[in-house]
Length: 91
Image (cartoon, rainbow, N blue to C red; front, side, top):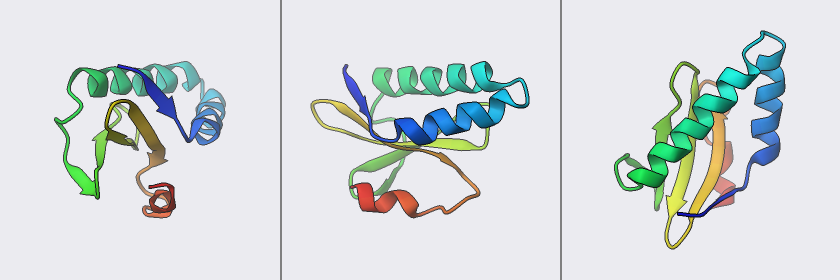
């Protein structure tokens, strides 16, 4: 399944943040592993709003918010404790 990544810049910023702690590659790996889980089971996670679902990223306080029609659309890769509703304008 193809996917598009709306929040790529915020994802790269989070990688940079974790790079300072020596965890940038680990964070990126966990996010991409999360996307692979979504691709395998796109309807497995709870709908948060409209047709947007959320899955938690292992080892990090982040969630991947996504919608799925013909293509997987990543709405946000978001820290779960900061501005919890900022992504809603993207749907």
